[in-house]
Every structure is written in C-alpha cells, then in structure tokens.
Image (cartoon, rainbow, N blue to C red):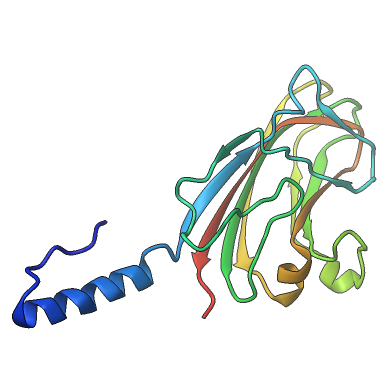
Length: 186
C-alpha cells in the first residue's frame, strides 16, 4: 500500500493532505516479526527435566523484522517478548519435542509476565497451552501453538517470557516465535 499521489493544487491539495494523513495514521499499526533459535538443534537439543519449569530459549539467530509495525523497535529482545499496555498480540511458538523416556507425553507452554519471580501466581502464568502426544521414546513431535490476547501494564513493565514444562524427560529444538501486533493501543 502506498500513499495517494493527487495533484497538489486547489481542493485536490487539501484532499491529498487529509488522505495521506489518514494513511500515515493507519499504516504501521499492525505487523509481525519472526525469531528462530540457532543454539538448540537436533544435534544439540535442550534437555527438559520432568516437571521442571524452564524458560523456552530463543537466541533469535535468524530474525525477520521487515514487517513489524513502524513504532516497534523489536517484538523480542532475546529474552522476553516486548509489549505495550493495551496492544493486541498473537504469538505462534514452534519447536520439535523428542521424548527420552516413556513417561513423556505432554508439554505445557505459557507466558510468565512477572520478570521471573512467578508471583502473584494467578497473574504469573498466562496463555497456558498443553500439548499431548502418544508415548514413543525418540519419536519427533513437531509442536505449533498460537495464542492471542493483549498486553497490559504488567507485561509492558516486565515483558513476557515463554516457559515450558514436560511431564517426563524430553529434548527440544527448532524453536521459533512469530509475533504479531493485531491492535495498537490508543
């Protein structure tokens, strides 16, 4: 989408200025970026311990930010997802899980907005998602989950850090986040 090119004289000048002003206001409100981890690979995965909450790492080795909103420097700083009070957000998380024991058949992913303190518990863990799969040691499980919501003042202050927990020992790799702003706060 581009600004309108209308002749710059008379009434057309006023119309062009008004339309271009509206374009500038609307353009850049929404957008997305993608961040892929380069540290944890199939050859060197992250080992999850049963029932232990772990931050889901992403060193953003491959970053695509060409489509992010014009007023956003980055959606993800390598540790946490940045958010502004009142923005709408959608986050897609992808990774591959490989159970290393037969008891591993589910992973839980959520967002911690407490700067790692985990308190208050009711607000600490939002957008929880449990993914279950049949048991099978050594069988790759591609996992993709998306949550959509909004970022409020606590998220703006602390950021949102993704956490993961498995009910049994499990390796993960191929971690990526796609973050989209669906609404710009007023």
